[in-house]
Length: 140
Image (cartoon, rainbow, N blue to C red):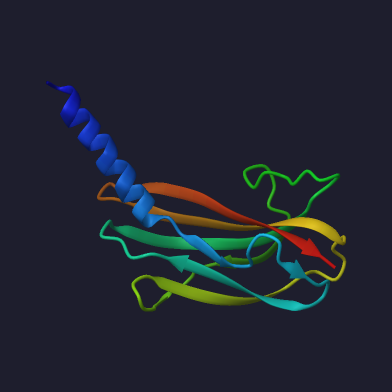
């Protein structure tokens, strides 16, 4: 049957893409951040055999209004960092980089969304791969 090869290709593609995804180590959901104060954001990339040429990341924070946080595809808010990232290896497996950032002093208190935006060039083609990771935090 021809269905098996098609499913195999789709599963293989999904695995290679998922193998390239990054993770937001910190802050985590529910973290409390303070206006005008520094905090650490950790970006993690698990090990993968697929080719990914790193383009860069953006780290941003945005206030939520009436309990509704903006979608990162619509609006990132206050960009705290935008540029390259150079993760270092750690055990067991994978890579990470820490960033020291500061919550803007003018930011509203209450719920906010911290967003990690990642762009890399994936595969032999390559093609652009854009992804977001979020944490809902509280600003005090």
